Length: 250
Image (tube, rainbow, N blue to C red):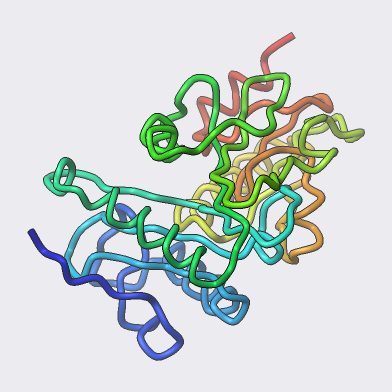
């Protein structure tokens, strides 16, 4: 078992691999967009810890006050991502990364650690069953089944921002909120933009480019949220076929 882990820093960010799946020797626009986004977040206490190997083994978290998520609370860490894939599963890496985050939170006097979950596990969410085994509990939820999980050290709890729980907007046209935390967002938004322009589909593609904007998002997820006819549709990245299905609904 490889126990060599490294944290991304201002000194090594330009050399280290940053994506869960994308691997290429050439510069990938999505990965480079992520790199630029992360470089700014490191200044705010953001932590990206990864196995020092060609692997998908990492955790990404930040102080809740500066985490780009529509979640409100004091003195917490927010876990964006915790992933262990492929041959590295079942070797204790996820537990080790979570223990690192929790220990870091305790060492810095935090009130706890929180993360996004759902009543039914979503493919793009970190394993909530694993988190609950460690002691995370549901402290807030939305009407469509998303949950805020928290491991509280002192009895205080965070909560979803009011707008995130409503998951509605006034704009009736296709609306997508996005940021560059996920390396797949760049290529997806470019494809959607091109399709909408070619087919003259009115669309509002709104980049979340500030912490203030992220904290007031009308949906629970920070880097991708699709709305149509004023209603929340999905946090899944769309291909053209999926977009057509959404827009053809009565």
